[in-house]
Length: 326
Image (cartoon, one colour):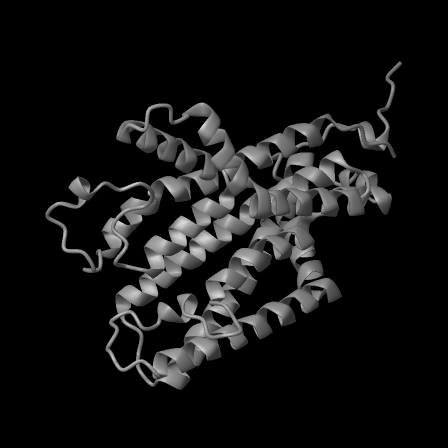
């Protein structure tokens, strides 16, 4: 006698990515129409407009010519507002966490997870679809802000941006999206580990605050413990500074800051500890070509992407092992 399998136990045929694009479209529609996203968009837009108008006033008061005037829109501030790059480092993690902190546990709390997986949708497709939807939403918001900044610059400054300025700003936009991807995957990971969305949100914000406020001090202390200065030799100071730099780069905020510095300030020739002998023959103040700046930040960009992949892989493994009951 043949025993018929229950509907949710039947083996599905086809690719494990079946249904991913349906999940992506549904999640993006929810993100773009939610009140939470509208509030975040208004907050970022107002911040960008305020910071950029302050930067434009400062630039217009400057007499000297600048071949990278549009890059200064991101880096120049005017009291009492800081530069827009400072706002981005603060707002991008919050937007990413707000998008993803209830990605998985929200489905459990609404009791819809078993219904979704009862459809021809695999767990792989569900998780990838949700992650890509949040990443595309974040990229869409950041691209709109990028276009808004350049549009305000064209209207107020009255000059066209150069090709290298646009290329550097595009690479900076890409790096900002990767930076937000780290916090997206972190929030998704906590949404898998914790069943309460509030707990997942608080855990994600706690990690972000730890790196913002405490990791720099902790890196200094650890560097002094690992490489103490006993006799005052220059080699001891250099070794301690190298350890301090290495430990500080374990923070996504440090990697993102170094990327922004190299891309938005073309005169930056090195990141981290540089000895005078290493700059022999270099004309200080001369802007680097974009190709050289990209080679300079390639380790930092690779680090941002690698952390995103590792966090997503950890969340993927945990989600695959979770028990889902009808």
